[in-house]
Length: 251
Image 1 (tube, rainbow, N blue to C red):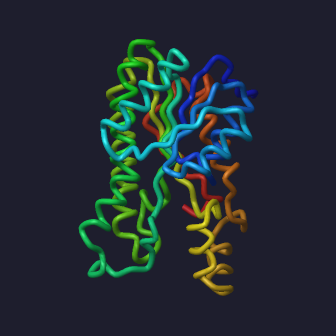
Image 2: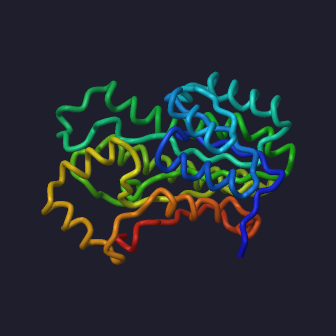
Image 3: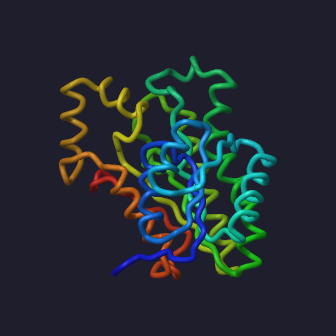
């Protein structure tokens, strides 16, 4: 089965590095015209240069920013067929007790992981509905399906919310020809934050983590990109509202 995206216009957020970059690269290699968005100006520009995409620097935690980005893409490319929200992350909030989490700590996690997904879907909806076609994939997490690590209260809550948003949007958008699904990665060493997290486990913790995975290996950004591209494909046109755990069997 060959997945092609010729004549499709895609937006991938969180594309400066890691999973977002891998998804954007795979889409570009499969024929899509790709737009990238990230708050990391240098990183997103580097990705765009390598894969021949158009970079946008944006903090998408507000409806105004999301509307502006979608308008820019439609003005440049005439449409938007594909939306992948891969931005997010723990923002350094790992291994902290609930007593340590301030209101701003809580809200910054939701802004990155949930608010942006909602505002982007809100901005993209009229474009996709008018076209009668759309593919939306959110990158959630195993932490959004079950308790996992200690000290990620805000992140786990946000990813659970993202999964709920994905399922609700699938119900609302389905009659308009738009599918909405989520990929829930296991542990992937995809960026400096996950590298620091990996190092913090130490040799014994690392060994225990890997031994808890059926395939006895960590995932890669390409593993996540491959699953995402299936959800985005024509072949997945009758699949919506689903959450696919890509975690080597750990779940």
